[in-house]
Length: 313
Length: 289
Image (cartoon, rainbow over all chains, first blue to last red; front, side):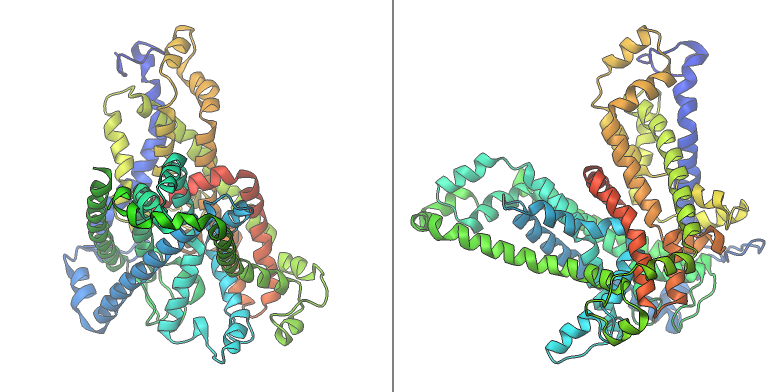
């Protein structure tokens, strides 16, 4: 009995099962904890599962989807949450992309102190949402906080996170970008380090100025990094919602789809909205979010691969 | 547009550019960087200053310099927030789950990287498509619930034993180790298990470090899963404990700030010493979104 391919030389016969046996614990865990449940989300979306042990689960067909998208005031809220998710994605992706690129360009020079700045801008990434959120909650304190002081210099006041839903939403975008622009920056910097110096030298000898160097050398050769960042930012921001949890809680007029799934599935009583454990419904919502991510990621990928062809031949 | 097509019209600029350009450019760069730095240092400075104030002092003067630098808030927050217990929980979850994850992952990744058995490619694909699968949140909860592991340490740790990106990083790195090494070790009579843990693991140390750091940071910072799976205060990790603390003592920012700082310090120390691995891990891990 031989379990492995011919190129496996450590043992023959039944002893050659060792690689497979040793692989199994990790692989089975992966199937049971990740892949299986992931697939099962679709199944649960057709049931009325509650998340309370011992209550029977019934098959309800497309009921959840119907309710989620078409029925009553709740469905209008859901559609609003969906639109809001798209807004969040749009603003976070574009701003984070542009700022990340700007920082990378500035830090790619041989100026003194670049290591310090790079470390500083990347640091929030490792702190996690709880700390990122609390730091900004303190900074955005409406009564006498630093941001409020800054606003009063310009003669305005703001309630920040406690203000109008739109305002609170905008601040979450700010914190989201503050927390994650470091990743975008680092990916761009890694891309820039692969661009050989002689291209810049050659272009300089031909008389190219700073903007032309960027436009005709850096930017085209940065295509892979730019594409990675573009896709990462889109997918990441469509699914991001934890900062909403820490910064403003589940407040009407600010929910995004990811938070909605959590609130419907696991109950969330913070703020004025109270929801129960409706896991079948939440599964349907999470499939809706998943479809949205897939659709947008695929179309983004289409755009990106066309751009890649343009520059890479 | 190519470089060549734009050159003729721009060439004369060369005359004056080297004299004035670089210096101005340098000043402008620093100016922009300092503005950004202020946006990053500002909130952190506010946090540090607040942590040294007494509560009345904070209400009187939220943004100013503290009157004295004492560690009263830190010791109070440490006691009030049940901090030692939370910290112990986090350390336990992070170390146990990361150790199991890394050990099992090396054993999964190696035969896949080498193609030692039929279906290795298929299994790798199964790890690659993980990024394009729907979130597992709800069925995962049902699974843990029905196993009777809801609100237990084991159930919580179970959630962190897989990470497809880790496997992919390991497989890619292992492919750079020459196969001849396997052959000569096998001929010399080295067993498979011993070969992996005494020869391969030391050789792929950078990848192992990256994966370890990536996974550990993810667990350390996790906030949603403890909110879902743990209802018993004794089982909370620090992230959850911090949010609960905020709920209870929400307006007591001095103590809350002290608690946040105490939580940040281990992460920042880790960051200073392992920056290279953290950056490579998190940029690879960012794919997870």
